[in-house]
Image 1: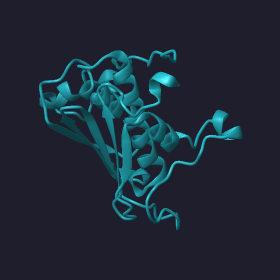
Image 2 (image 1 turned 180 degrees about the horizontal axis):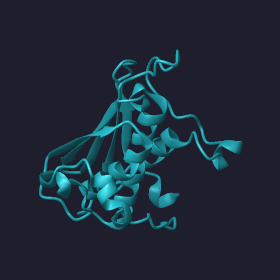
Image 3 (image 1 turned 90 degrees about the vertical axis):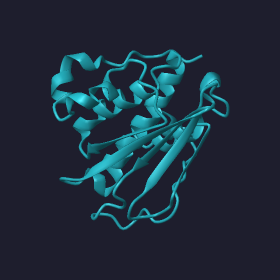
Length: 183
């Protein structure tokens, strides 16, 4: 079983990170088992400073599960959020992305909706794919997000639409279909 690396606590920068969150929604980000929900979503500013808030949102959505599940769910969701910021129009000034979590009987499904192909790019048509992790890619500092999703999610995909992309993954509560326990 892989060793979990502790994630820095949100508490140090809590007010700064939560500054734009109305009081009645702060429970979406507190890291405690959530009020029962079927669907929960939040629209985040498309800037790197939003990633800790996205991680807190994801961690809270999975808070009723064990530590491995919470870690994998938050890791994969943070990868999708980071991809939305770095590789779509959502990362341009004034843009946003949305994370939507749906709870079903056997797990959680996350959909990350971004604003599509960035204006500075001509690539990005069609469905996404994860490139194999071989050679130097195994130790690369970036470019491994979708490979992680492909490896650790029970199932994943995207809508293939270049103007408003929705990338999703499902993670079964028992991690069925995930290579996480074997990694």
